[in-house]
Figure 1 (tube, rainbow, N blue to C red):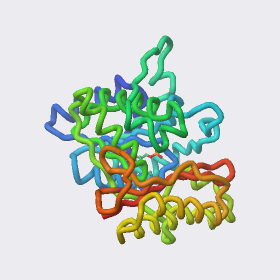
Figure 2 (cartoon, rainbow, N blue to C red):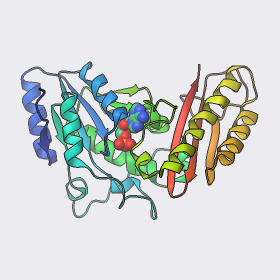
Figure 3 (cartoon, rainbow, N blue to C red):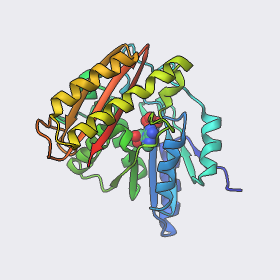
Figure 4 (tube, helix red, strand yellow):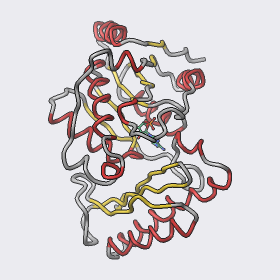
Length: 283
Ligand code: AMP
């Protein structure tokens, strides 16, 4: 039986554990999450295990990355179940700070990422990536792991993190992990818990439509036509609205206008109050 992870609640305690492990010559991987852990998160923990001697998972529903009217209050908080799931993949420590610990009285700092942060989800969730970047900068500089692992499910987030760690000289290797999906193709997400059984049936249409657009572009089809077709199919399947479907360059996130260049198909759509995102590589 693997041991339960150590629960760490303060930055000072996190630093003390990391310092102990470093003294013993051990390497450290960090996997940031907002909890409500599913198999997608656990796949990142397993990847982390192969990259370092010690794995720290953080669980923090970060208020700075939610906009007004978004789901900060109702976001699922399931600490006991999360810790039990982390034990099954042999995670050493769970860093579970309070909002007050991360944003103490008087906190006044912001991080802003230009260009990469302005498109796709950045255009539809103002301030979201700045809030995400703020907490990830704090997590990385608090733990100073050798490697930090993020899922390609949030591909734009991963690219933004690569950008600011380079720009700010944060000495951490950033690694991406592949998207884990349900058998029918729906990308695993903590927000899938919000879906009614009927909405769950509809939800798969996002993945199906983006994958069809990916196949069309791969076969030489026009990226903007493939995106328009995917948007139509998502609405026809029963989504209430589409925030975007776009084909973009996988590193610069610039719009791709011709088939045959490196690309990834990105989409976000709303089903009742739930906003789902997904993406597929054109390889
Ligand atoms: P979250 O808890 O939603 O903030 O996600 C924490 C980390 O898990 C992020 O790096 C996500 O990209 C990653 N993640 C979420 N869903 C999946 C998935 N289905 N497959 C792989 N990684 C995922």
